[in-house]
Image 1 (tube, one colour):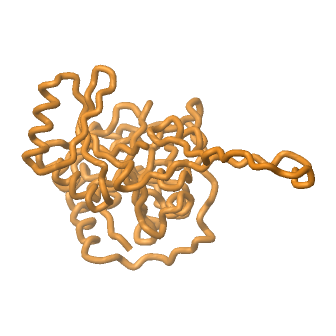
Image 2 (tube, one colour):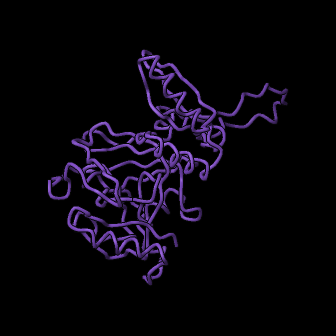
Length: 297
């Protein structure tokens, strides 16, 4: 099992960080997975208090500072999801609750908690609605850590990661079905091409109309649909300066996409998860802390 930096409230002391580092040396012994215990039901969004004590303005983990959002409203982001399971079962989460790998929960670095998000696996269109009640993942370049149940629901257990879209949902901002979510996101819905009609005999004509077949959802593909957006700029001089820094670092290909008054500077398409991780790490070193994944087709 992949060890992860988990369950910090680092502002309460450095000892928990040391404990988490020790997890990297090997997995602790935890309960066995029982897939039959995992819920298949989505979390139901509701309004909850978000106490300041678990939502400080910022906190520090392993030398990096994370800024908690002042509001979750309108949050919509794409990135790579991971999941955590038996090694952390029943341990305390950042909210003070006990982690239950069989419930629809998740960890996020900057959303105010508790929160509810709709997670769409951009590689297969599967969705889950989870309650965010923990901080993490603190492994580089992962946007959300899902419980075992949530990861199972969106079909990412075997590989351990998936490209996902994350949207905050509330009772007055309900979740969007996968087909509509994929249409409204940069991903497009694929439909089968229309074939020319062929002659048929009267006997071959079916008695009634064939059942409707829903269109297949587009699947995100490494090397084709995945980009890293370095930033969006209104000043041409800033665009040129960023391009120069990326060239000096050997990062390519660089794409400049004008959208209204802004120019979005992106790297890609990115060929693989390994390339994504390496590029994100290099961008962080040269000062682009806010670079993020963008999936479009």
